[in-house]
Length: 171
Image 1 (cartoon, rainbow, N blue to C red):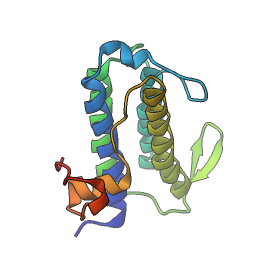
Image 2 (cartoon, one colour):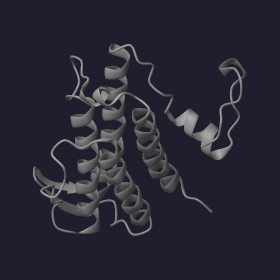
Image 3 (cartoon, rainbow, N blue to C red):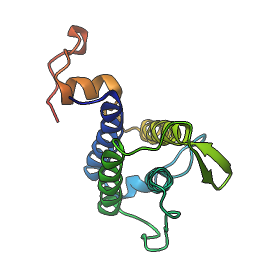
Image 4 (cartoon, helix red, strand yellow):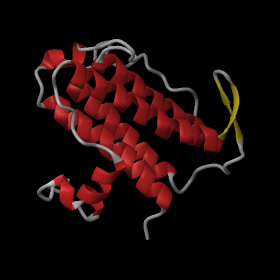
């Protein structure tokens, strides 16, 4: 039986993958788009999101800090997909081996409870995917529907609300 936590981390990985699939269908210069009030360009934001996820995962697994030195300086969609796949695999593996929620772990800004780090990993991704959606919208590109309702409908067979129109394709 799938746990609630595995569904939540599954959503995170699905949303990253779906947004990267969408970006792969856009002109390459879309990665350099930005707007005010967000982290940076789409490229910078997605790279930050994914390398941060990998860093949070390493902390939760009790591994040394994440080394970004071997990553491309200006990752393309293929590079970002590789990071996302690595993050998804690591996160899925962590679900059943997380430390106790109250376990204090070192971070660059002090000790944090393991549960706080996992919460940050999920919320951080949601916030930055929203930034990317804001950038796309500000540049006249309709972002994909990657919210948790869409995940339930497309991946887990939840009912599609009648006012949403035709049943979406499953992913």
